[in-house]
Length: 298
Image (cartoon, rainbow, N blue to C red; front, side, top):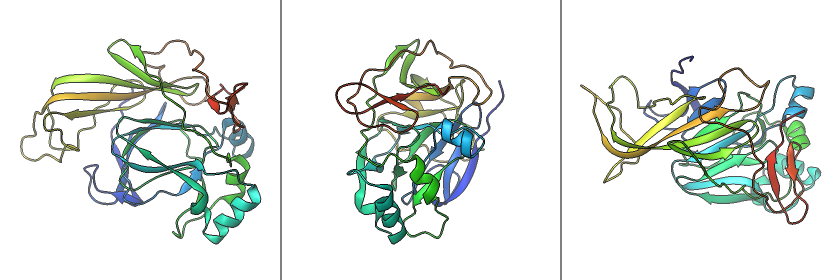
């Protein structure tokens, strides 16, 4: 298996809780077959949207982007809009700096899983650290950036954005040997495995162990549970207690090399949700309101 050394990435919105100093907004744990990161925002990330595979392949010549967050610390995120918007209204509000008025803010808590299929308007709020699993794509279209002088991508963003209220998909964990599968999509799966005992840490780098299957993170706690493990000095340390190992596994074909999920299996249909008009690549049920997980692209 190809090793995945952690890669700290400075960001304009970066915090200081990942163990690599201030301004480090991301630590990339693995880049293929999935892009797996830790995110630590000190400010709001841009309001953005990702294109589905069909649009991205036609317009950009490469696959689209689907992702999920496992929440590590509480706070607010943007997930969709408060009410239906036309493209014209969304464009006008973005240009005038008033898009924030119609964005839907949602409170999230540690242990919550937030799935972000292509087309969902979203943003990560200050202090909300997450473990992020995504398809290996860098396609992000910014709709709004809170006045920061960075490029927006309004035309492409508005072509793929779902401009009406969209519920966060419910997550129903399924047992797997040694743990549970928190989320399964046609593109990746997210796993959590309980850990008990001790963990020996070296002082050279922050503790980011990688379980197989696309990158992962081991987090530990005990009574009293620390918010995060501090950088070590001297001879390292050996904390003990209870914790969890997180891991992502690639699914599907044609969107990046690498192994299958470590504890995978055949994809079964997810539980039904209420129906609502859905973005491209997201299928809906008859009756009720709301989306289901995206189909495998054809």
